[in-house]
Length: 330
Ligand code: UT7
Image 1 (cartoon, rainbow, N blue to C red):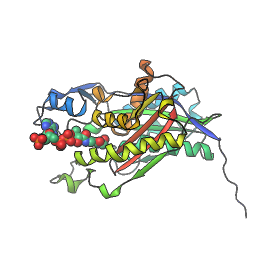
Image 2 (cartoon, rainbow, N blue to C red; image 1 turned 60 degrees about the vertical axis):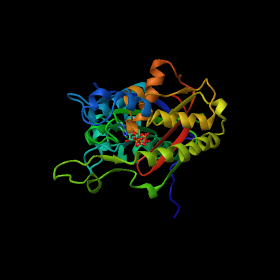
Image 3 (spheres, protein in one colour; image 1 turned 135 degrees about the horizontal axis):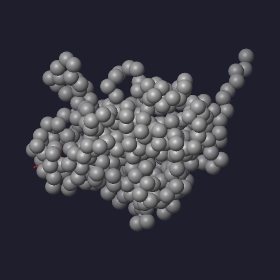
Image 4 (cartoon, rainbow, N blue to C red; image 1 turned 120 degrees about the vertical axis):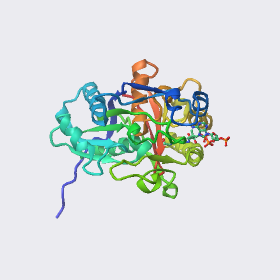
């Protein structure tokens, strides 16, 4: 018996982006009450001056809903045309169920397929790859991809290696069919040999009491070394796979983990001066999966980047995992 197969659009693109920035501003001096550090060290070693944490009435759901509502409105499509909701997060409290069905319900998206992915700081790019594949295969007409994080909930305020790094926030995009291609081939991978480099688990956190939630631990130097070697090569492969040269790029949105990592990637790629580079880390810190869509929205809203421009995105983090692709900005 021959079964019918779904058929989709030959191409896909990001139609729109939205984001949510929490209200509570946490500067370096505030954190230095809890760790032996200084505003000067954090600024010089990472580029971070302040980050946003959730305040009164804000949580991963409210941030995600705000970002998603904005993305859906800006896409101009009817909510009922969204067939799938993918949520990328590492800070949703429940092992199961996933956050995605709840968000789909709160957004009034009917019985859209809904699931979470756990690819940490690479999660947005992983999600773009999946959404693109769903649209092109005909498994979904439109996909809502949300990256939502409240890393402040899983940060050990007294851990000198991580307390200063992370911020909360959410970003969302709608991905749908297109007559011209707006999403280049994904370049992604993993190195489970470095499974321990960034973790959130009871055994590593040690001494976690029943009822307490585990916090993030990180071997910063190991991740830094990997990011500045392996990820640098991956950025070049993203351009090659998309068939463009560094000169043809307009915008570079790397994961905002450390400005020194971004500087190394820039040197490696030899990007021309005209390329706009995301530096949201200064005011938002590292927002894990939400970093790239938040930065994308910020650049478009400020006018530094323009709709239709060609951008390279790349994320990397716990796993270790990485993922990137060239996209056309919505
Ligand atoms: O988003 C997920 C992916 N994550 C990343 O990509 C993170 C990658 N790693 C990093 O960004 C950096 O490793 C960190 C920012 C986390 C740390 O910076 P670093 O330059 O690698 O610091 P280090 O651990 O090599 O320590 C350098 C020095 C040491 O002092 P001595 O031995 O040179 O005197 C540390 O004791 O800095 C000291 N140090 C600090 N000083 C003030 C380490 N942490 C701190 C601190 N404040 N918080």
